[in-house]
Amino acid sequence: MAPSLFLYWTPRAATAYRAARKRHTQAGRAPGACILIQETTPVTTRFDVLIQDTGERYRCADTRSLLEGMEALGRKGIPVGCRNGGCGVCKVQITAGEYTKRVMSREHVSEDDEAQGRVLACRVRPASDLQLAVIGLMRKSVCRPPA
Ligand code: FES
Image 1 (cartoon, protein in one colour):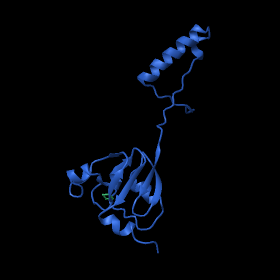
Image 2: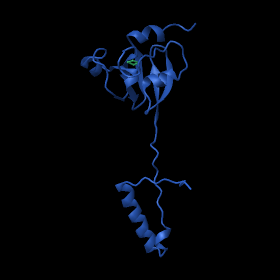
Image 3: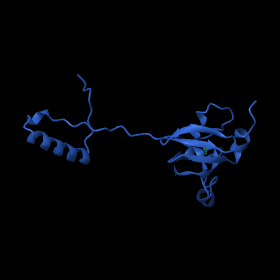
Image 4: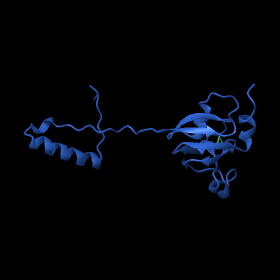
């Protein structure tokens, strides 16, 4: 029969377990009756993203790219290319907020661009609420008036 409970053992968990077991033993309980379950599921935080050009807002988890969050708007015209920082169609300018970024093609984002917050939405994840402006190839399709 397969086990129905998995425990992930880390040095921190081992220390917490030893402390709990010591308290358990000092309380006069049987040594084998102590179990420590530690939360192992990573906590996901969701942030508000404002597209300044259209006034649209969407929620984006810190585990997803700004482009994935934008796609979840279900809006036509969001250009989706390689999703890997190589084609440059998803270029945006971050105007406020914190974010984490992954490697982007220097063909589409220069070091100066990156320093100024001009990045590829598929390679950036929010680390706070943020605001962005669409630029480059993305601008034409996102800023098109709704049909
Ligand atoms: S989708 Fe190709 S660079 Fe973002």
